[in-house]
Amino acid sequence: MAAYEGGWPIRKTICKREWQVKNAYVNGEKIPREAVQHEFERLARLYSENGMPADELKRNVEKLLVQAQEQAVGAKLILLRAQELGMAPDELVAKTCAGTPDPGEAEMEAFYRANREAFGKAEFVQVQTKIRDFLRHAARGKVLAAFIAELRGKAKVEYRDA
Image (cartoon, rainbow, N blue to C red; front, side, top):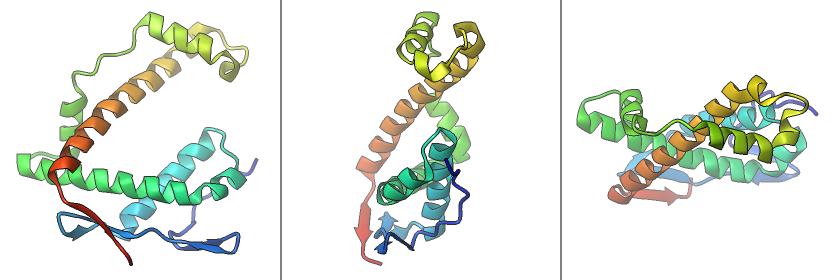
């Protein structure tokens, strides 16, 4: 399996097809292509590090671009809201996710049992911290997604041809 090494620009010929997403605008302000590129690179690296083969990444490049663009839109919405509140975006995200409970022992054990193959021969105690971090991240991601959806409902988000 070849790891993703970065460097795929938003506009790239892959399998003799050119992929390009429309420009996104939040409240009339264009989301910079560099922001989408940054999110795309981050997603590709994340999927690669978690075992997605490079050929599968290439087959899913259009979906990754759309996902990257949506994440860039979400980041812009958070930035705008943070500015309205006079705080840093990271501070707003932390405040939004602050009440999210950590996973309990039973939830972590259930996750371990349901995904036993992924852990190989490792015992629960050996991967407990990794499972807790994963479940904590997933729970906070849901809270943040709901917050972004709320912000999106109050904003004007448009997609226009380049």
